[in-house]
Image (cartoon, rainbow, N blue to C red; front, side, top):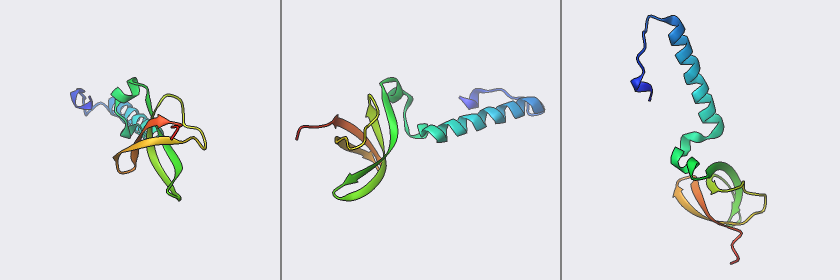
Length: 96
């Protein structure tokens, strides 16, 4: 999107405004971890969370894509690994 902007590099106010806009975008992206999520997934109801969990007796911390409400403490889930440190929750509170 940024590549389609026409900017006059001699206009200091325009450059400062653009720099402020880019800083706000950077800050929001890092604060919400949206650098990892596709906007289409967000429209479909998926959110990304930094989750601390136990797997095979080991304490882990990774990012989880979750559809619906937030995960609760001690909630059990089935997950599928998408990439290193990124998982999608396929089933919440499975019976087996």
